[in-house]
Image 1: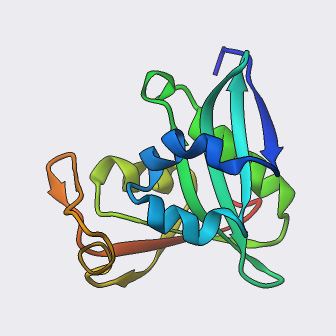
Image 2: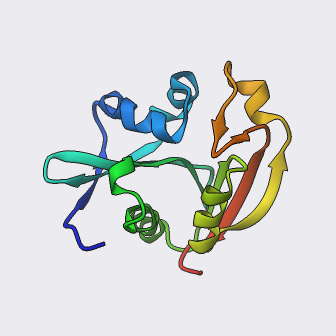
Length: 153
């Protein structure tokens, strides 16, 4: 990524990033379940937030990426990979895990970042979201969990 940006941890006023968080998770109710207890990292270009990532510690050796979102005009520039790399550096020796839908480009992105398939939670999206979620023409039904040992590709 050629553009200058900085990543900061946000500890107060996390809700002010809701518009961007909703890009990564379409339900404000679901975001509310993890935002308060999670660590929120935001990437900024100048004074504008251009990406966010929320992670929750699941014990002494596992961290779950609950939300990763990049503003559409900043996508495909390495920013998502950079913010994931930032999280990995904060948690050396930890297992990173995340859940996502069956969207081909999203799964490809995470595979290219070194994540591998772990397991599937059947009907997660249809059971937990009030409205159907369609991405890239795919109706999201199942949650696909991926994992990565931090520091390894």
